[in-house]
Length: 206
Length: 206
DNA sequence: CTATAATATGAGGATTTATCACATTTGTAA
DNA sequence: TTACAAATGTGATAAATCCTCATATTATAG
Image 1 (cartoon, rainbow over the protein chains, first blue to last red):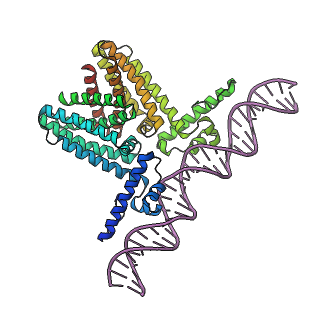
Image 2 (cartoon, rainbow over the protein chains, first blue to last red):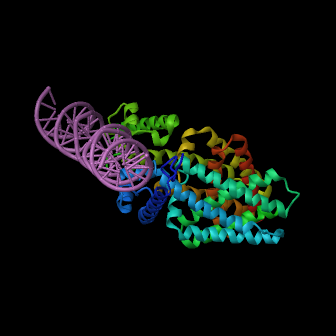
Image 3 (cartoon, rainbow over the protein chains, first blue to last red):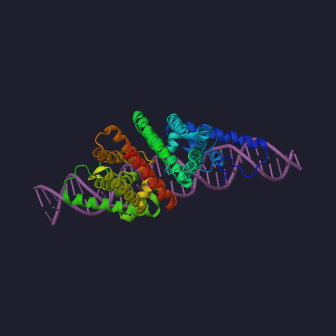
């Protein structure tokens, strides 16, 4: 189940370190290739060649093509989680929550627009069972963070309701981002604004 | 560009009719196979064998595997469109709109739950460019219908805003359905209810 | 230096989509 | 009926890829 490192019980330092470097190089090359023409068109042979290793070695570091994609997806998700956690950690009062969440959406949208790899991977999220699971887990984590912030602002709200609502908001936010980047830029901006308004109302008026 | 029929300029009746039957048989077999193990696991050779024709013939009726999936997807979409158009055609007043839309979501959700093929195809919607385009076009059509109903109920609302909002609602509705069927049934029900509440507020309070 | 363990290699197995040269059937007209 | 043309059917096989595995190389330890 070790997705990133190939070895189960290695103890020696240098080897482990070289292994890390290899993994990083593979991921970096995969990133470049995905950026160029999408994860679907990314060939394992291209990744190997670009990373300067053989196909066989590539498969020693990642059990299959999906594992590379998943690893990249998880890294982006971690970035997103940090972003959300930071944005919501100190919210105070209803207005604070409103402002923080609005900014969060903008930041997320900017991230989507700026990262071709992220766009590619998330566009295909629903296709692969494993990626869908990652996306769901991510939304659960972020949803919990949002629910906590909302609970702080409105302590008398039902906690389970907040959880469910926040989880849904995270998933719909993802869907909105995917939608926004798949239409003309101006329309995408407008859609994100609509989403923001809709969600803020849901959050403010319980 | 003729996705369903194989021939461009056929005029003779019997041939065309037989062709239709073949197409229907192929789609029906594909449906069964998808229902059994998903569109990904559906092999063109299985479809051909089940339909009692050769691979070559199969490719005479559908240019590629995706075309079969797309045709099925479009058929389900047409069903959905009819459902939405009927549900919204005679809405009168704010309460009428509220009730009609609420019922519409329930009907759609029931459709998703009941149709394994629909679930499979829509789960993967975001993966394939062609399917994504179909989904977008579908949401545009349904969004326009919803926008029209909302405009009738609230004539002074900005028409462009209604269009954009309704388009977004349709896409998010789809996302909610996908989400709902991918979690435990009880949680899915709750999520659909949350979505309904959120959207109704958006629609009622402009 | 030798033995053992770790890592690298790339030809080829396996799977699956899609093609195409040829065979067969169907429709039409003399 | 027969002959010819058009439409349709066939399936071996090309093509594209993912991934494996037997073998070779390199590194570490005694």
